[in-house]
Structure formats: structure tokens, C-alpha cells
Image (tube, rainbow, N blue to C red; front, side, top):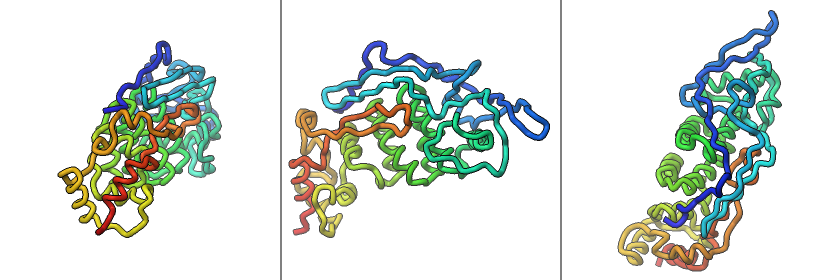
Length: 310
């Protein structure tokens, strides 16, 4: 494990007790005027919803987080007054209707009109039913904050479950990186393995995959080599059986480890690519420097040699 030493500087983040609610009361409007109605959340979302106002307020929009550093990875994260987009204002009026306009993709809860707020709150009663991508992403953005500073284990489980029911490419792509980098940050290889198994390895960015492979000693088989071969300059038609034979000749087994090719010290001195961790706009300054495995000549030479069909 080479990326397990994540540390927060002192006083970097304020501990948050995310209110463990299953129901809230909101003002609703209809022909008879303003009423107060109870909204029940899905059990999976208990303790994961952010609230902006009393008595259930559990987030301060002026929180500030400094930096996480290791010898090989740096996460810089500041929130100079950015608003958490998913936080619910329980004092805002809500209207339940079947004719709500489609919201913008990266909308904030506060900016939804009363009918759209009603649609979103209905979605929170069962987040696994089909919905507009905007509402799905709004919930996901709140879960991202938990990946950083809240109930991250529960948030991971909910995101993985959402990925099973919702196949929107935008959601799948944006949640993939956040989950993989959370696995690194929390030293939890189970997250990476669950994500890779769920997605059958597809649509996982190459740099994040090899970062997890090096951190958690993932087995790189002929399947992964074929999937990522083009990133290493291989564009010919490949034979998995031949690649497996080549791997066995090289290391004596049917899979490759990153450590078979690159030492920890070597990886720590590789060129880096700066990537955003989260899609949540209030976490816009959270970045991670990831080694460019596909541009390293040692790794490229090994992959290219394993792909030789002669």
C-alpha cells in the first residue's frame, strides 16, 4: 500500500453531526393555501441529507478545509463560502404536481421552483426509481460531501446501489472517480473491488484504475491489459490467451501486479496529473495528483511486450 497515508492538518474540518432524520415537515401549497406536510425519506438516506435551516440544520456553508498530503498524493480542499447544492431549506414552500418543469442539470435545491422541490422530495422517498437526471445528481452531490467529511461508508453503499438502478452515463462517469479516490483516501480496497465488479471494469479511467491496482495489489489480467492497451500505444488486434501466456512467462502466474514493474519509490517520482475529485460545485477545490502510469516508459514497455502476439 503506497497511498494510505492521508492526513488532515489540525483544525482542518469541523466535525458534523448529520441529522439522522427519516421525516421532515415542509410548507406545501395548494388551492386551500399553505399547509404543513410530513415528508418521509427512504431508510437508506437517513443521516445522509443536508439541511440548511433550523431546527434540523446540519451544515455550515462557510466551512473551510485545508489540505491532505502524502509523499505521492496531495488533496487541496477549501470552501470559501461555497453553498452545498443539495442542502434542503425546510422553510421553502413546496408544491406537489405532475407538471413540474425539467430543472437544469447542475441545479441547487434552493433554485428549484416549488413544483420542482416537490418532485425532488418525492424522489428522496424512493431514490431507486427512475427520475430526471437533475434530481439524481442533486442527491449524488450531497452524498459526495459525505465521502469527504461525513458518513462515508453509508454514502458509498448508497452510491453503489444507485449505480445499479440508474444507468445515466453522466452519473456513472462522475461517481466512478469519486468512489475510486475515496477508496484510496480511506484505505478501503473493498470500495474499488465492488466498483470494478459492478461495472465489469468498463468506464473506469486508466489512471484511477492503475492507482488502485498499485495501492491494493489488484490482479491485472489479460482482460485489463486488452481494455487499456490503446492507452499504452497498442492498437493491434489482441489475443487474451496469448497475453496470459506472456504474463506467465514474465512473472510465473496469470496476472500482473504493478509492483512487478514499478517500485513504490519509483511511482512517487512519476509525472502527475491533477484531477478534480468531486462533481459537487461546493467541493470544486478538491483535487488529487495522480501518477500517469500510461505515460511511464517502463509500464508502456511491459504492456507492449505482453501484447506481442509472436
